[in-house]
Image (cartoon, rainbow, N blue to C red; front, side, top):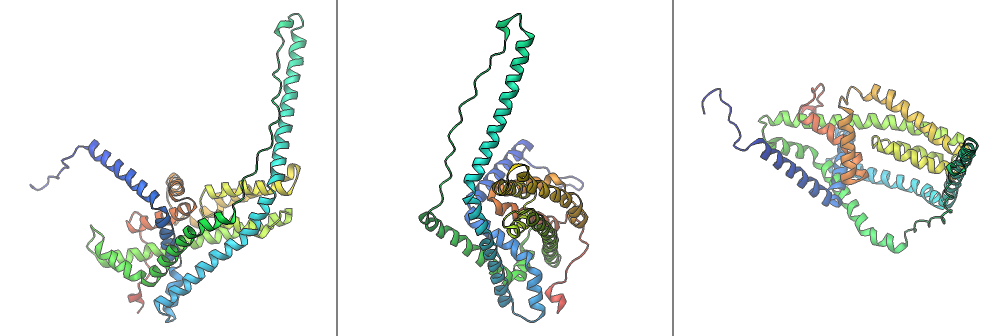
Length: 366
């Protein structure tokens, strides 16, 4: 090939674009079909990356890799189990209050229909007063529809349903636990193997350092977000306890967890808090917990998070939003949680952002 000439592809651009579209569609279908395995596996990898500073701390005090990985695994499982146990009473209480919520919502809709009916009758009287000379031009009013019967409540899952789902849940827990343990126990060996097999790069040491940097950045980002979410959770706990919402501590915990799923998590939490407000109060007080939370979330999203995370996350908000939407569409809540850490990891790995700080490897520490 002569110097100065660039070798062009033999395929036209529309063909290449169509092949890329087919490949993306096939990849999305495969990821969606393998969700029972890949979703807990990727969640375990992200959890392992987040817990990597703790693993490094175990290494510094002389604890072997596998024993430190076992400690981290037990810690993660106990943390997840404790959160589920704390949330269970509130879920049961809200389910028991479903008839009151349905009755209050139905009463509100009935009052709204009565107000609209009053406006319609008033407009009829005005029309009749204006068109006294032409009775045929009076406005006819359609009678209001009869009130529909109250909707049947959703069936409560039985013990048989729980036993039917138990093997699937246990299988996902096993995949998560196994992946997390072996990743934490062999993470540096995995990075070393990847650095030698990633195509297009010749400097394996540079790739390994970049993998460690990506791990460090994701861990630092998650720690910063966790601190912000913890502050929001404490604020929600204080406000809900002062307003008299039952289970204020659990609502603070839910606010902490929901804020990890950007955009959609706070929206779902606001709806849940509205449900709790309707169940606990009557009148305008039903909206007050949700209004207070929306105000706190606005302050957190517009001032606190940009001030603390802005320098680390200089990413277009549209890209962040679309990645979260894609993750939730693909794998549900797990996809929403892992979407942003995976994005940060890929950005650092592919050197789309300047590497300012590179954590030392274990060999460098020795």
